[in-house]
Amino acid sequence: MTRAAALSAGLSDRIAELAELYRDLHEHPELSFQEQRTAALVAARLTAAGFEVTAGVGGTGVVGVLRNGAGPSVLLRADMDALPVGEADRVPYRSRATAAGPDGIVGPVMHACGHDAHVTALLGAADQLAARRDHWSGTVLAVFQPAEEIGAGARAMLDDGFLDRFPRYDVALGQHITSAPSGHLYARPGVFMAAADSLRVTVFGRGGHGSMPQATVDPIVIAAAIVLRLQTIVSREIAATDVAVVTVGAIRGGSKENVIPAEAELKLNIRTFDADVRRRVLAAVERIVKAEAAAAGAPREPEIAPINDFPLLVNDEDTTRKVVAAFTESFGEDQVHETGRKPGSEDFGCFGTAAGVPSVFWNFGGFDPALYPEGPDLPQRAVAAGTAPGNHSPEFVPTEIEQTLQRATEALLTAAAIWLSPDGG
Ligand code: ZN
Ligand code: ZN
Image (cartoon, rainbow, N blue to C red; front, top):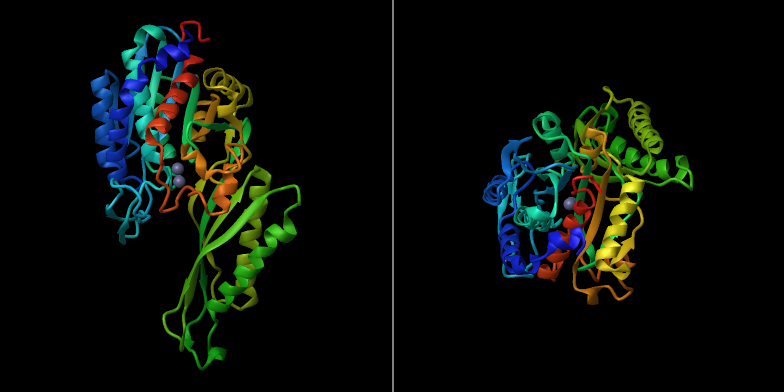
């Protein structure tokens, strides 16, 4: 039996219980940095399994360490937070939770990005590693990260002394559920997910009566000009061979039809796959915002403030090939797919970058194969057609949860098994 198979042996006996745990987490989602209940549950389970457990790392983060003799250290990471999304009425364990976001506004909360499945799979892997200590050697760090959705949790844990407080690791491994047939795995060596920058732009004008625009500087007109001019960044300033997205996702200003307000606000989201393209897009945004305000004679320069940012997610090429080879050996070629670059973003890469070690991130499917008529290689077509739910949708509830959890847990164990021997291979 391979080491991967030895680590996964007996897992199927735990799946019913893990599915129960998953449904409980799904019914009790928590927003970024509010993952108190999830963290307590994680800490209790890791402690029961025999891990050394530290809670409250970077806010609500939890780290479990299992030392099991000589050999490399492997970091396995799951994110814990949910989103301010109201869940569609699809399953009996749907979320009815509400919570106040950072702006104080109370709204519905849902695990619309499947982090509940990530937590469950990593707890399943932790149980297996603890129960099957005779079959591996080395150290495992099980990292349960808060606040991935706002791009802040990985950095919060690292800023909280993560590298000094816990054993150094040789590789960082993580995974994310995606809209694809359950049982299938997706990976890509090199650049995998986009860098993301969210910005708040405040434009200042001079308010006054709607009947006397000559006595005002209208920030709504400035904001409108900015929105249009921003469209020329991608269409006129970025090469056809490069990729970028500039989205104005929110625009707010004024309260009444006959009052010209004093200021207006825009919220921007920018995605890029290359550090140089990112710099150029950000510089163009700043140039356009300031120039449009100047063109209108604004009394003050606009303010541009970051809301959050995610680094580029880059899979170490050699290490990713090793992981993909292990997946293919364990699960068969027809279950493992190379995928394209994704415009979504992730802060998982911070754990590899900060420690100077390779990191590998992959996706696993979690839905009925019948939803993907063009086959497991092209699941994104069904998402684009609106026939399969995408991440962050109110309908994003995995349909084949036992099979999905089984494969996600096996994937973690199979990848970790590459390193977990006395000689590290
Ligand atoms: Zn998400
Ligand atoms: Zn996510």
